Every structure is written in structure tokens, then in C-alpha cells.
Figure (cartoon, rainbow, N blue to C red):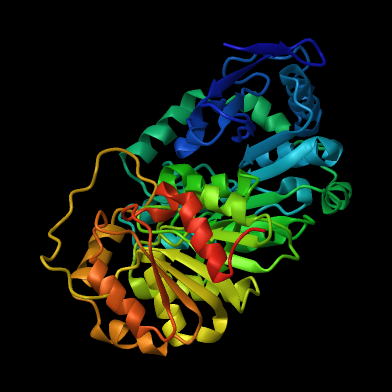
Length: 506
């Protein structure tokens, strides 16, 4: 296992998991071995995790001076690891009590921070310790759980300084299932209690100076809180996020203090979207939508909307070419890519995502290019609010006739998917029996429209697609014989069609 020597000669260990750009991870506890972080719910798909065992924990050596367990004294260990890895700037993640060490490092070495991720941090370093009242209020959110009464009594006793009669670990997890029980049980051998007693001792924190330094931090900060966590509760997390110049608070629904265990997918999507430099997020109707943007800010905008099962990356080649003259926004609709997967899906919901996206980003009048399901969402929006759209491109968009024969139940593929599987049965049901008003209102689309058909190799009925084009006033119909995936199979011809329509490169 990799090791390095820190400032006082102590040998420290770190563990590497996954591939990609490194993400330095500081465990909490306080002073718990990094083993409990695991792969952070599968974040290793996106980043290489560098999991530091703090001095005296896990596989790291104990220091000669126990006073060096104090949080501020360990800032130098993080800096020594950065130097050991040869990194000019680091993306740094801190969980729980480890968030305080991450904040102190960022305050001391702001020029070394690329981005800062704070997962359910108890913000002692900011002078904002979670109060017993806040913790108990969060615990009471679990009052309907069968184990609540016993766990709550033990928790209240511990917070009052009395010896609890039983453990209260269940209150720390959003789901007290077998995985959570195993995770909690493993903690018994992962803590250094002597070090934990020193970690936050007198002199460890100077909140006024720390807040002043972090207010000047020129790096994005994500603070992720659990909805039912008490340390910090979402309100305290919001106050902590406000201490940063560029702080973003996200609250994971149903999550406790270890959100990657409660809903790994939601956790990974939120953190990965924050860490990817070309991804941004906006919240629409309570749903966090991720998107990628390219091109000059002053250039006229165009919004690209993917099909079912895809995401914004599907447009990479098209977006790169269009960005020569346009400000290109490629969005992940709900249930896809790095956006939230809320579990309820319909063409109307995707339409509302698109509406809210355009409004929230101030893109009224933008050109919109939609593929398949994304085209359906754009068409429904154009029927309702044509003023939001400048030009409209519908690539292989279903014309809302009942499917003949109808689609039967679909079987979920094995393995990890880049979209939420319930999207498929939900939209199949609507394609089998679409609202006839949708196709009845094609004549209400009052914006210049280009319909792109994929020819006989497409699963979309080309005659009905032509009928749709004939019903939209002034619409053009262009056929590019590429099948359903025109913009990926024949990008040059697709871009040429966009250019002739007034959306293109010089």
C-alpha cells in the first residue's frame, strides 16, 4: 500500500480506488480509518479516490506526539500528501468531522484548492457546532421507525452527557438495513478514541479567522447534507454553505450522515456533476438538472435535448462544432445522466424540465434541437409556449400516434445504466396510448421548425413523421438516411441541415 512521510517523520498510508483525476478524501469519525468510505457509492467510476488514513488510524503510524492529533496540526499532513502526489492543485473531499480538516486546509492553502466537497460536515471550524436541539429535532423525523423509541432515548441520554443504555446508530443512517448495520458494526474497530478526544480540543479551531479566509476562497464548494441528518441538519448546512464565496448546498432526500449508503446513485450523480469541470447544474421544480455548456457567452444560444436513455454527452460532436458560433447548452433531463432521478417520468415532465431550464437560465427565445424523446418534450413546449423558442429542430421525434403494434413490457438490461429504468415503461405507456391532443395541436407550433427524418432504417414511422411536418405551419422536412440516430451516425449531414435552417457554424 502507498505511504509517505509527513512533516514530523510519521509514516502515513493512503489507499487508491478507481481511475481518473484524483480526489483526495479525508475521513471523519473523528479519527476513523478511511476504510468506512468504501468507494463512496461508486464515485470511483468518475474519479480516483485517494483515501487518507489520518495519523494513528487504519494503516498509518501513530505519531510520537499525541498532541499532533489536533485537527489544525493535521493540515500539514494533507499538504505533505499533496506534495507527495506531485499535484499543483487538488480536489478535496471531507466527510463529517473530516470536513473540518478540509476547511482548515482550504483556509491555509487556498491556492492549492481546485474544488472542495464537504459531505455532511459538522462545521466546528466555522464556529457552528450542531446543537443537541438540532440533532434531536432531526432524530424525531424518524419517529415512525420501529426502533425509534429505544434509539431516541439513548441518543438523548448521550447528548445530555449520560451513559446511553443502548446504541443509537440507526439514527445516523437514512435506511437502517443490513448494509447500514454492517457499516455501523465495522466502526467499532475503525476508531482511534484517544486521537478523537484530541482532534477538536482547545486551540484546534479559530472560527473567525477561518470564516474570513473561506469567504475569500476562489474555488467552488459543494456542501451535501442529508435530509434526516442532525449533524448538520439542512438548515445548519445552509448557514455553513453561505460562508463560502462560491458555496452550493445540495440536500439529498432521505439521507442520513452517510448519504452514499442511503442512495448511492443520488450521491454519485450530485458529487460527480459538481466535480466535472464542464458540467453545471440548475434546480427546476425541485429537480436538479445537470447540463454542459460550450461556446462564447455572448453568442446566441441553442439548447440540445437528448433522447430516451441518453444524456448531454450524446451531443458532444455536434456541440463542439456548433460552439464555434453559438452558446451551446446540452441538458440532462430528469432520470438521465447526472441529473436527479426522482422516479416519476412522463413527456409532460420532460417538457416542464425544458421549460424551467430555459426560464431559469434566461434563455427565452433560444433555438432548441431535440432528438426523439427530447424532441417530443420540445414539441409539447412549443405548442404551449412558442415564445420561449426561436427555431425548433425535431430529429426523429415520435408523432404521437398510438404504436401499432403496441410495445409490451420491457426487460431491464443487466448492470449499471446511465438512466433510471422506470423511464422506459412510463414513456412506453404514453407512446402506446398518447394523448390525441398532442398531435392535434401541432398546428399551434408558431415557430420556424425543421423536422429531421432518419429514413427507412428508423423505427419511427416515416409517413407519420411527414404528416407531423405537414401539420406544423411552414415546417421543413429533411430526410437523412441514417436510421434513428441521425446526429450521431451522420453528423456532417445533420450539421449541414441545421446550417441551412439558420443554426450552424460559419
